[in-house]
Image (cartoon, rainbow, N blue to C red; front, side, top):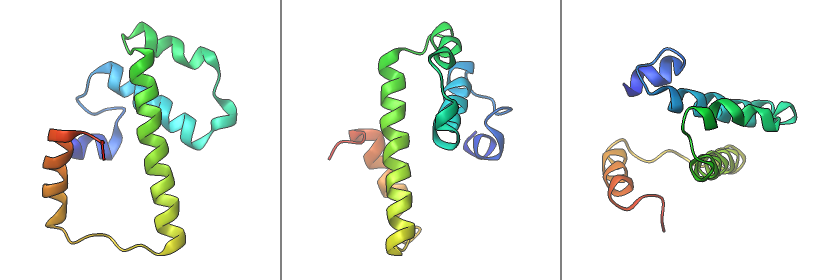
Length: 97
């Protein structure tokens, strides 16, 4: 499923609420000046709560900042064996420090 989402979230086998959220985050990231309050209507109608939208914004914001810092400062990616360990930690503890 991850590969399908990365290939094209619009056709991936995911819940419609997630598909809409990903589309909204794309717009917020790539075209922030075009975002309007009405963009939330389909998300709220699909059952996405305002709290979940705020959480999604925080995650997108964090990744955008980290990405820009990494590009600017020339950070290197960790070794491939780090990712499974990090994924287990995120699944058990979330994005807390």
